[in-house]
Length: 319
Image 1 (cartoon, rainbow, N blue to C red):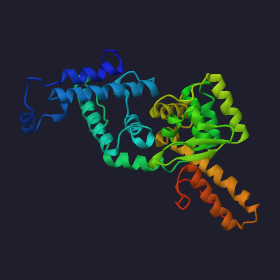
Image 2 (image 1 turned 120 degrees about the vertical axis):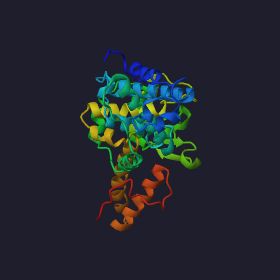
Image 3 (image 1 turned 90 degrees about the vertical axis):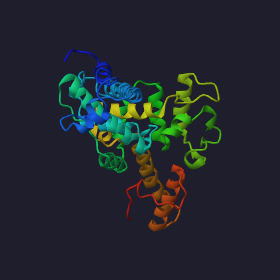
Image 4 (image 1 turned 120 degrees about the horizontal axis):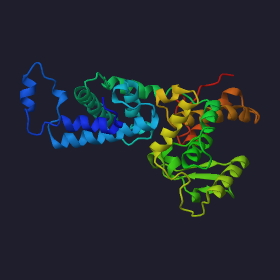
């Protein structure tokens, strides 16, 4: 295989098998020896596949820079790419759209195999996508793992401050990238989250150490416009940076589970819940009542109602 970049290898496989004036799709279906996935039958399909080639090649280059040939791309890499596009991981696609992408990737692998005479297998079943999304909800970030990943990021960058904001305040990734300077009330020690999930707004308390950190970051980055965003990048970019640095730090389980920012949110929820139990006990509450109040505090912190079940966010403590 002649050495060309990944995007060229993919797009040439599509272009070379575009059946513009050749055999019809119907005739290929009737031929038991033919593989219907080895041809591109329309300009619209060609353009759709070209778009997939671009985004998929860019993803591999960004996350697996050692991969230079399409034949070396594996199914776990394909699955990671698909999950990175899902809404739960900072992407813009719902489950049906991600599965449509999976079908296009599968076809692309057949075109690549035909074009370069290799044997890739990039087929991802819908059940695998569903199972992997469920897995991502079962993993809590460990604080030491986060610190190891942060140590690999350059100070003062948009992505790093976005991840730090998520970890400090238990924010969703969309809340992180929407946060503006005007949303920080240093005088009253409040961080205002404006119209988040479900149109709900909330205030999060800022302690003295967090105030110092925020002021230092704002000063260092030269943010003066009240409407300026603290993390002016896309949700997906924040998630990708976290996954990439966790892998480099030696914690591939997070990338494999596609946890993204959600695991940080769960980490912070667990920490707050555990801090609040002894706080309420010190005020004369029994352990049972203190634990119940801690759950309510944590739900409010996350932007949920106080009565919502919290078991998907915390590991309950028993007195």
